[in-house]
Structures are given as structure tokens and as C-alpha cells.
Image 1 (cartoon, rainbow, N blue to C red):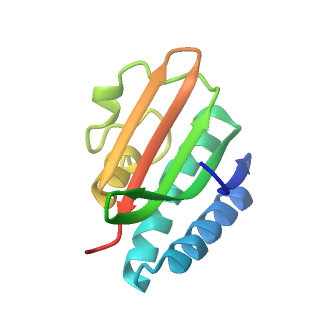
Image 2 (image 1 turned 90 degrees about the horizontal axis):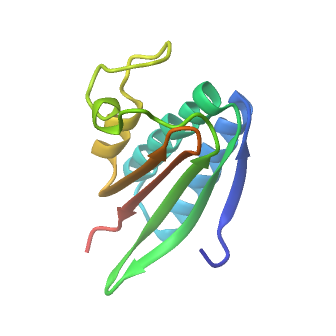
Length: 134
């Protein structure tokens, strides 16, 4: 990440800030209004997981490029309890919290690339990318 945006996540207001910053960066990159909404939704879902499960973390937003492809990269990380069973957490309707269990799998469907690393007691890092249509 070169000159990316870092948003500390501790509360619902921070989720809104991350969402707005992500939408603004996506607009600057050239994403359509619909794509900006998709990106903002994915950011909201991942940031909400930080608030609910880890209490504190951060969302990093930046441009990304791979060959001719340009896009946005969102990295959400925390030092919370980690996810004991990532495969199960990625299933629709599975939830350890009060939500519907759509956060992780829903975000994965919204983005073009989605990676999750989690270690019990060490925290979780989610990296997502959305590419501009060529």
C-alpha cells in the first residue's frame, strides 16, 4: 500500500467513515455508482465484523493494479479472537454473533478477489479486491 487510506475501526461511526472513504476512493479510480455501492457494502460488512468480534481493528483502502487491470484493494485486520473455523464461517447463514451470517460470504460474492487469514487468539485479516471492467 503506497498512499492508501487507513481507518481505525472501533464503533459504528468508524464503519460509516470507512464506507464513505471507500466509496470516495472507488469514485476517484473510476468505478460506476453501482460498483461504488457494492464496494461500500463489502466494506461495511467486514468492518462490522471487527466491531462485533474484535472491538478494534483497521481498514486499509488503496488502489491496486495487475497488468492492465486497475482496481481497489480493501484490507481489514484486527487482533481479536480469530475465527476458529474459517471454512464454516464462510458458509451462508452461519453466524457466531447477532447478525444473519452474511458478512464474510456476502462480501466474498460482492468482490472479485477475497482472501481471509485467521489464527485463533491472533486476529483476522481479510483482503478484498474489485477490478475495473476492461
